[in-house]
Image (tube, rainbow, N blue to C red):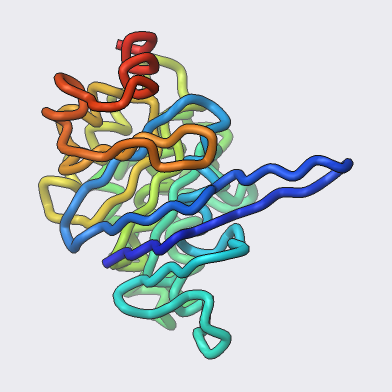
Amino acid sequence: MIKAENVVKIFSGRGVTVRAVDGVTTTVDKAEVVVVIGPSGSGKSTFIRCINALEMFDEGHVYIDGVDIKDKKTNINKIRAEVGMVFQQFNLFPHKTVLENLTLAQMRVRKRSKKVAQEKARMLLEKVGIGEKEGEYPSRLSGGQQQRVAIARALAMDPKVMLFDEPTSALDPEMVGEVLDVMKQLAIEGMTMMVVTHEMGFAREVADRVLFMDEGKMVEEGTPEHFFTAPREDRTKLVLKQVL
């Protein structure tokens, strides 16, 4: 479903050049959950943003369901409509209600009627446990509730793939669990997911594969069992020792 080949992203400025993503190659199969971990500044968020061209990479290729997103003939907006993305910040429209936040893209991009879009939105709000909040504005919701709205909004587009960029890092600790529970349920239902996170418990419990990045490179990948009990690389062992 996702195939990344030798992806390189370079940031330049003030005489400094940084290879934020340095030759990363990996795949994510249909219904697979791949968790990307690594220290801050390791390039994992930049890499996941390259997957749907929010960051345009300098070298390499990314294929979404067989389509090369760097090909000039590729309609990148059409690809993005198939790839749901959930960010650290919730990026909800503050002047629109929860229900309006969920129906806008459905009506504009998927060309659904208002009635069909609202039915889909209400079903998804129930799914993420906040059906009673449809008439509220984002400012009246907790961080955990706002992030669940953001997940529901992404799901409303019927994506083939869901990308999560540290979806719990901006939340208070007591709200983290309610968002991870929604993500666990998506995994159980067979959603293809790529998740950048510092939540090691989630990685251990839900991931099919764990990728460890450091200094822009893919240092190690394996099953959670291998990764958390018998990592091969010294850098992986050091970071895990600090966080576990």
